[in-house]
Image (cartoon, rainbow, N blue to C red; front, side, top):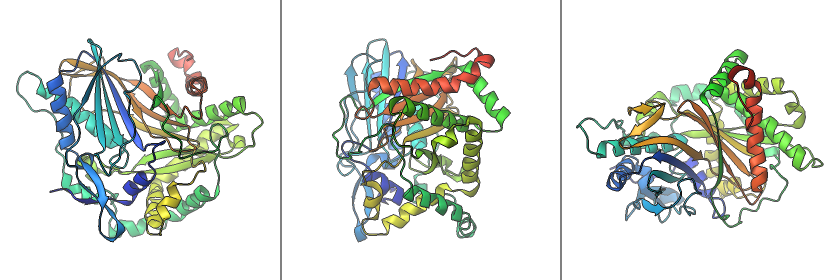
Length: 452
């Protein structure tokens, strides 16, 4: 019996950072050519849920003022089926109250020849890697539920007994003690996190008690086609950096230009990007969906953004240092420290100041090991083809845009979740297009890239 389980510090941090106007939710929206077979889709949804205990659980008080995960009763709701345009907005949704309902909801939108599957996750239950585990499980289970020759469904064997150690991060008493000296660098970064005051995309007073905006979640998406992605990778290799580091640099430049256009006389301040970091080790490959993630924060002023080459070198230095010294652990340990203080996590999460200007998260190439057939790089699941998808990161007060980047079917996909209370749609479009123009500018000669 996997449940009950203790709610660990990062999970409680996500719970306390959740509020009605800023739900701590992630989303996946999968677009299929062909209609989903209802019985097979229902079965696949339940199969995927059955493999991930934290997505079938609710939170209740436990001993010593702590919280614990217990099995939801009744269990998770079934898929909700809707008729409507598959290129329309997300189905009407809100937050997820983990004290009363489990942390995954699903919708299918159909228009006859196409279907869209929308999955909504509470971030306290799992991170982006966990989200992709559920997506892959659905695709495999759906394919195997349809008529066809018998065979293995391809579902990876998971080991729920690993969940109690989901926040061990591969540390032992031996290597944990060796990691401590490196955290002196992390503590310097933590001091900067606490003492610097980043500025929002556009000047405003964050108000965490805002109601949820109409049309939540507000999203825009763009893609770089395969030829441009190949050119981007070649440039990264040439410069001795990663594609993600180039993208972060280009977003800093785009945000700085955006602010210069929309508030040219505003006081200069720190731009801060929150960058999620995957902390999984090899031993975690059979772990069910969970949070094994931390964050690092990159701060830059306008003068540091003025020279894009030096900016890229500094981002490369900071992220390589973070990887080598495992500085993502610093943020996790700081959460544990604050949780031990009376009201400490509330102090971390309920303030009204801007904590990060933007979020930029990169999931890499998604679903690359899925053992299903492909057509032109796109996954075939039974009678449907997964044409493309959006994946959204959550927003919090003061952070008006969260960029989530991944590769699928040899294209680079960018999903921007934005706050329409802070950015008009025209401004959000301008920001996203400015970012993509910046990314594409050096690619034109190599891949025949075009502007947005």
